[in-house]
Image (tube, rainbow, N blue to C red):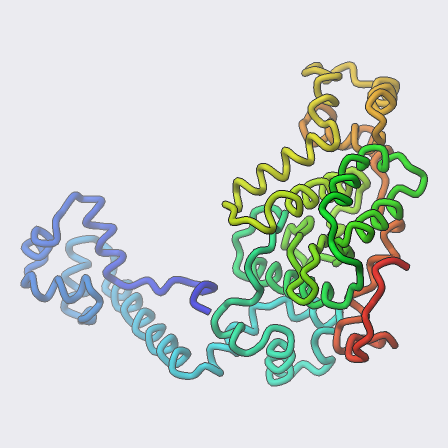
Amino acid sequence: MSNYKSRVNIAPSDYIRRELEFRGWSQKEFAERIGYSQNTISAIMQNKQSISTDMAKALQDLFGETVEFWLTVEAKYRARLVEESTVLADPSAALLKTCKLFPLGELRTRFWLQAKRTLGSVESDLIRLFGRDALLSGQLCPTGAMLRQSAIKKTEAKLATLTWERIAYLCAAHVDTRQYSRSALEDLQSRLAPLTIAPDGVREFVEGLEGAGVKFFVLKPFHGTGVDGMCFIDAKSGNPVIVYSGRYGRSDHFWFTMAHEIGHVLNDLNAPVVIDEAETMADEYARSTLHMGQILAMFGKNTSNITRAKVLSCAYRLNISLAVVVGVLHYYDRLDYGKMADLTPSILSALAPWSGIEAMVAPYSNSKHNSDSGAAIPQTV
């Protein structure tokens, strides 16, 4: 998986090139100053020739770094080349190296890995989860999913995100629903704001998704991934799928994420899109659905006089929940996050009926309804 290298193999030539750029020297001028032929310097800059002790001494005199520094950089560079060539020659070594970067602890507690902690068992379980070819190639999940998450940079977090996606794909295959209806989903989207204040709005919303032929479930994120939700087309049934991570679990977060993902389903999943543009459009779709522009307009830019009474008045006029109003004010820094936090309660208990599918699908779960039985899991409980 060359896309997920945990380090860069830095060669002596990289340091030399930096020094030349700093001094404004050409490679020809460098050769003249250090007293070596242009052919020798060219070979070193292309990493075709190693740094000798004599060359290290010349570099020390010219640039100031010690002989030991240059020889150590050279030795580490050559050692890593040997390691990488071994990995490339031995797919099993590459696979084993990759396996160690996955969230193994969480996968074990979530019953995707065996309890025993041998490298052989980890490798076999990850092959079972992704497939050997996918692990070696780095193509861990089908393309086409629209993923809402915070920016992540660490290799391990990226792999954890791909693991979450893969589990979502597997779980979706075990959710049973009817044929997709775009018009029914559009109707549900038009009723989303009032559902946020309905006494049983979460259940009505999920049943509305089911009625529109959209599969839905909650899948806990892996640590550090920053995933909010995702939507994609189930390859087996052709139905759209919306997954909620419950990362924050607040009512306002749930409703915004759902409006965002519905925007993707209606506008992006069946057409080629630019991901960044699609995310921006889905955000705008959610803002429109939840009247976020109107909420901000009602309060203006003065943050000193936002009271509970005004929040209540805004929610009443727009026929939307207090949680959404407060969530918008929090997000746009009109209201400190610590204020009125009691008006953005957790929604996770209401989502409990759609939160157990992973335990039913995971191969080492004790659930009696393990997916190996082949029975489809109904969407609503």
